[in-house]
Length: 132
Image (cartoon, rainbow, N blue to C red; front, top):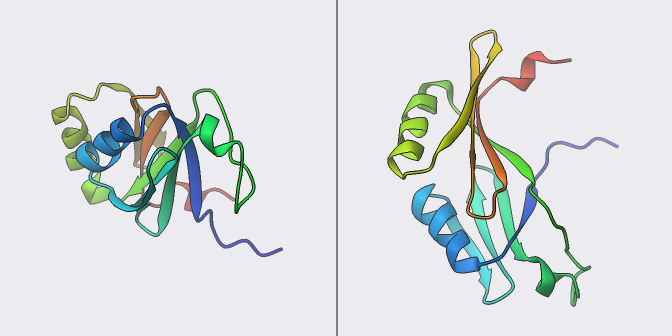
């Protein structure tokens, strides 16, 4: 198997309007799809962030059921030159930064939460390329 990358990831949210206000309104991700009362999809670079209402999507339909619970984690990658400006943008949106971490080698990341308490991270591009 030769997997190239993770194309999409999914979070389960309680309120789609609140998810849109956060991911599109505050973080600036483009909304690329929506089924009212079920899910909303956002573009994140060449990846897609899926936000589903868990209780609705667990029943399935045309596609297999999607369901999950709990606080999940995902990381957004940004160019090193854009890292500080994005950190300031997050702070200006009154989104508390829980922690910033120095991974060594000049790579930083910072953590914050979405309205459903999922742990989000912004990492500098190239951070994982140095790992074998």
